[in-house]
Length: 255
Image (cartoon, rainbow, N blue to C red; front, side, top):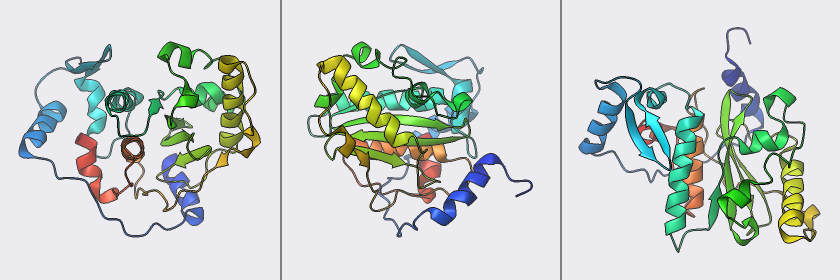
C-alpha cells in the first residue's frame, strides 16, 4: 500500500497468516526509580556520542550506539549482539537453565548468503570455524540460539532445538520463516556433525520446523522487533514461558 514502510508491509502481509495469540499474563517487573534514572541518563543525559557506557566481552557500547533504545527506534546489531553475549554469560553460570550457545546476528546471513543473495545460497564454509572458536560442541547442548536480520529491515530469532530435534522460529510479526530456514539449518547440522564428529548425522531428515504453541507474542508497530527478539532469547534460554507483550516494550527497551 502507498506510503507504508517495508516493515509495515511485512506486518500487514503476515497478519492474515499469523494465528491470533491468546491474552497474555505479563511477568515483566516494573522498573525501579534507580533503573529509570540510569536509563534516563544513558539515553538523554549530557555527554558525547562516543562516550563508552558499557564495556564487557572486549566490546564497548557508546552513548551513540545506545540511542536505538529510545522509543520508536529500530535496534542496531551492536546492542542486540551485546545482549546475546550477556545471555551467554548467564547461561554459562546457570546449572539449572538449558545449555545454550548464542551466536551473533551474522550467523544466519553468513550461512544463507544474506540479503544480497536473498538467503538462497547455502555456505557452511563461512561458519565452519565458529564452534571451534567458541570451543563448543553444539550436539552436547539443548539449544543454539541466533538473532536474524531479515532483509536489513526486521529482527527475528531462530533456534536449533536438540531436545526436540527440530528448529524453532520466533518472529513478532511473521509466522513463517524463509523457505530455506529448515533445509539450510538441516544441512548445517549434517555438515557440522561430519566435520566435528567425522560421521553422518543419524536421521537428519527427521529434523523439521517445530510448532510454536502458544504462538509467540506479536508486536503492533514497525519498530519493536529487536526488543521482542532479545526477550524471545532471554525467556526461551531460561526455560520460561514467553509471558510478555507489546504493553511491556517500553520497560523492556531500557531494562
